[in-house]
Image (tube, rainbow, N blue to C red; front, side, top):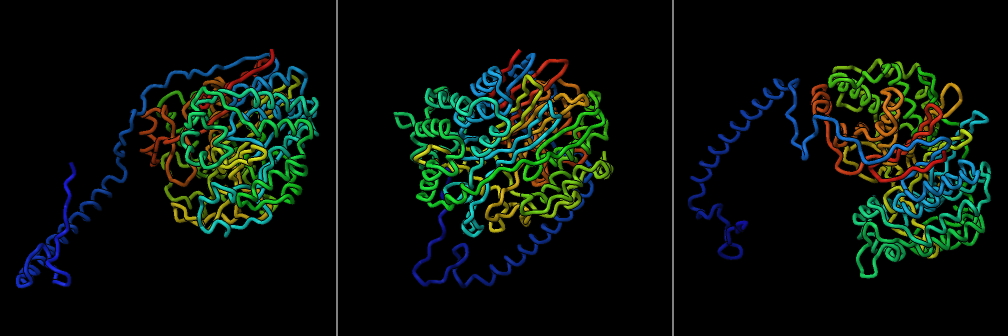
Length: 623
């Protein structure tokens, strides 16, 4: 039992307090003793400082003492995960919602387009993975049209309401994360509607109805949803609509495997199937949504919904030495960072021998990490092109000459701890969880789309009349009123302004071979870890010549400059980590979930797909 130490009591109110209980008559002698003792302590402290300085100088280049981790980092590669690498003859749909991949496959089987399949899959995913995405969020899409040999991107990212301003949070970041002020104008359904109008083949209702049916029947809660339901339980219970969906009749939260039924959301989906996607922006659903948000204290209006529009944009790209061209989304997405990193690493001529030994792996991982650091230094210059001029930076990031310049700055024997050495002068706000869908269609078209409500369960509120879980996208803006751990100024390029879209890490990507056929469709969820995870899977599949499953299974690592350490998954080999530390890197194992990949590739007339074991998605296809 812990001992209680009592403070000395005074004899009476106003009596002189004596240190250690001695009477005042003995204080002078005691003071002399104190002076002598303090002098000895100061001498000892000075000696310790000298010893520390000598130790620091002598050990500056010594191998660091390994940090004990449980379980210890392995010395041998981990066994293969339980996920299945699927091989199909014509098409495949990969998503992190198991029943939803089957929905997309069925749409393709009815001669629907990849856009039809994507919309149906996403609508389904917004039901069964509502903690990550849904009608209250937004997305970025990359689309390849094989017959036209053309790549386009679609920006349906959320926007700040017209009445939004940084001061409305009163310096309290939690208000930008949870509750009505955290909500931006959703773009999800508008994006589905516009994509279907332009590239859909099947009737709109036929595309939407599978999600309506799954919603009404209910679905079995996944482990991923259950984990985050438990984590956010307090917030879920505060919202009556969310509580009605996720609370068991006994009063506890639903458990993994139990049936989840969304009441109001199912009716909203049915109305959307009949009225079309614009109803949420100009119709009765818009009025209901705005009324609910304003009743809670939100600031977006019917005018915000009416004025919302999506943007069709040219992709960013890089052509590799092997002839493949990698396409991804421009700002406010992070495709330019992905193509930049690939351009830098392309000059190292990686092959499977680059990870054939411990020493080769250490060098290869070091080079990859350095590309991460240079990329994240440039991230602070990106933002919404409607508000920030990003043209020159994007041209620089996609320039082969600039990639060569950065590659020449990478020292194989050392790394910098100062972010300014990489060009970073400010800090960007992290973004958060997402969901991804990758599709290759029978006609050779491909589609990669990443969608989000930002934080898990978005702002932890739902519209009571529509059942839509609302995003927390306002937390993705940089805000000078919010303190950050690093004491850095927030990036002004990503500051909050009315109508602005915040910067996103989403990077849906399609790789096309020299023959015009798809080589790979890939994307990820996982906030700032998205571009580094996609790059790592591409590198392992294309350059290390691993199978799709091997590349997705491989334990990942990440660096974003702030904090100044490599974050890594359990499974990166201990000797490799020790080698990276000797070069000068600090390493820290993930304390939470990392990234989730959905990858579909085409090789030798076979469509190969793998859903990441980390979240438990699934793949369905056509032979």
